[in-house]
Image 1 (spheres, rainbow, N blue to C red):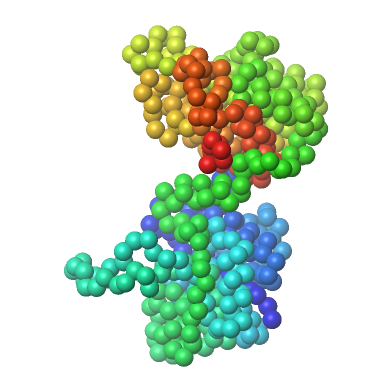
Image 2 (image 1 turned 120 degrees about the vertical axis):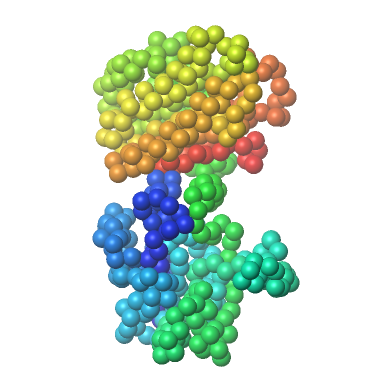
Amino acid sequence: MKNIAVILSGGMGARFGGTLPKQFTKLAGKAVIEYTVEAFEKSLNIDEIIIVSHPSYVDLIWKFVKKNQWKKVTKVFNGGKERFDSTYSALQGLEGEDNNSNILLHDAVRPLINESIINNCIDALRNFEAVDVVIPSADTLVEVYDDGCISNIPNRAVMRRGQTPQAFKLGTLKQAYQRAINAQRFSFTCDCGVVRSMVPGVRVATVVGAESNMKVTHPIDLFIAEKLLQEANKISFNTGDNLDYIKGKNIIIFGGNSGIGLEIKKAAILLGANVEIASRSFNNVDIVDIECVKNYLAQMEKKLGCIDYIINTAGVLIKKPIDMLTNEEVHTLININFIGAVNIAMASKQYLKKSSGMLLNFTSSSYTRGRSYYALYSSSKAAIVNFTQAIAEEWSSENIKVNCINPERTATPMRTINFGIEPAELLLDPRDVALTSLKVLGANSTGLIIDVRKDGR
């Protein structure tokens, strides 16, 4: 008996906006659908994957299949205008399969589906012919009349929110769809709705889903999904994590003479990496001067042979009301915190392309909301986040990864100069930030903003 995943990717994403449907929008450097298919590709219990696509994007789907070397994807079918049409297209392509086969229908725009949910669906099909994935509702649900007025408020305790995959015995789903077509009924909310309406004797079981198994419908969902993806990847460093991949790597650290940069240097050397640092105070490398940065990196490539990772921890904070900053201070804040980062990125690209390496930037927790008395610092750090995400997408086709570390307030000399002595229990240890940074270097993702919180929060 086979377990076949059917990825429904026929939608055009009218609510999402953009030039491409939402399933092709980039999430941390990869298309949303790539995460979705990858989850089923890696699942030990899935034997085959079929993708149903809008006809305009079938070729693009096959490009993803080739790029990611998905071995389980056997067919890409044309979808229809509605979900009903797309599922029916898949069923037509499954003619000849054993009716006892397990079919899991999943939305392409639910990229954070996990192995546990997949396995629970398959397990439930041992006793039931149809299975839905559901989660409790934290909100009160209401039914309304056509005029928008409330007609009923159901008991929330017995209400659930439906997700996917929805899983079926192939024969049951085929029977339901054939009856619907014979009855000329084509309007259903989901595939479980088709089965319940057309084969009423079949009970539809439920398994518990997850809040993280969200559907990317609106632009803000991408931001939420990115944070959930970070949590799913467990990027924060934990005692016992293996960082052996750092051994023998060539790492350049801008701003590596103090603070977090210095801690990254010390940790990387202990792990066997070859580390070079650059700063104005250490070797007169001025990141505001792009020619200086280019010359330095050229020297480092000649010395090391190649450059695997480039880390930019350079930054400056001047805590003052905006109208009390001198022109020189304004230029210093903007030039070092942003222009310097741009210069490093532009000069780094050719070397990271050769090594399929990573550029690692640094932002600040103040990027999410401007802070009084350091407006230029916090706004420049917001720019770094945007810049990181933009070039991550630009460079992904060239196998260059670009990520960004976002630490909470950290016990560094720069912070002490601006805030004075603070309780140690309120500050991150820069070594913890350093170890998380080194762990990120081993990640396959790009375009991530990795939060580092006190005590792993």
